[in-house]
Length: 421
Image (cartoon, rainbow, N blue to C red; front, side, top):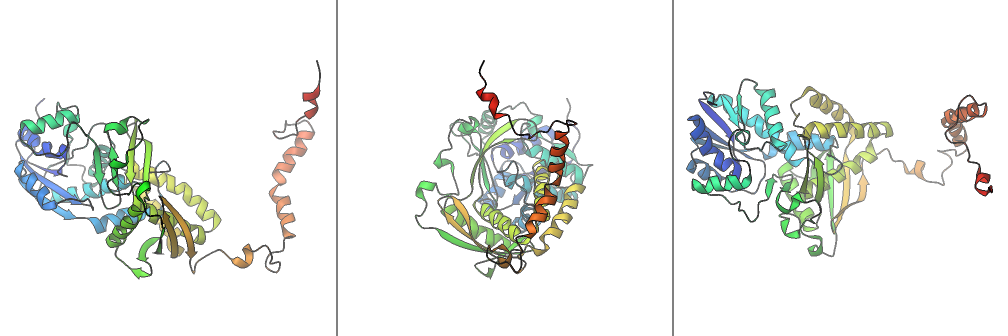
């Protein structure tokens, strides 16, 4: 099939195996200008070398942009404030980064007059959905090119062979083919031996977090201060988001905090197994949850748990640019007005444990919680409350005695077990 006529393409470029071979493939297939867009979301990368590599493999231009502050302030903090955790474990590191990268990629496409955008995601993964839903929501007239769904290459082994044929420098090898994704919030690992869920994760896989056996034998304590649910200070000193997270990543990694081994349900219908290292994110999420337990009333806290699951699914499924996500942000913001205070955490041997809570908005009252004070809580009042709270069950039991309905919780006939034939 003849490819469509395209004048200029903006490619989301990382310098990894996939995007390294995509530039020459785009040039060969479409015969047009290719601009590589490199987003710095906190990955450990030599961006000058990435730019040089993109140009060497055929890019007509390379744009590198530092998005770390925007990533944390506009994507990570809102998701964290919502309490969003996918399938009880995953703190959504990759999921949050993709819509930001796509947003900036579309912005660049408008600026340079490109009529197409491209990405290096495979046809089996989640990221293709996340990128393309963002493209469609932000600039529906752009053509979308997904080489992994178009070319004849069908595996990473094929991709490596393609790179070798064209003398494209790559770091992936046939002996160790792991897929990694890194940003300031986390680093993920998939593929290779991890594809068998029976295989235990090897400590050598970890790139950030210290294996438990090598962590210090003494705990560390951190104090995080929040304002309206956003972390703003460490140990009482105000600090910018990027530096705050870098410090917590270092402390969490040192004490083995934040490693998750999960079999998750992908957007496209299959299950996948991954390892996530999220040390600083685990610390912040734990502290935020503890502060909410102190400052939110019961009904708000419980209802927000419902919102959290929905928010996590929205982010995971690539629906960041959706009316519902924006509406939920407004809803969450109302809950976070009083989530102000300081949480002290103890980091030790992979554990992140609360060691202290403090807030001027605390709803915890020691004079109410103590068992000895009768002037603020009359224990005899509990009798009337229990009578009213248990009334529905009592009415059902009375009705079952008339034979109109069969009660679900009637006492069993214990004598049946002693009857003889």
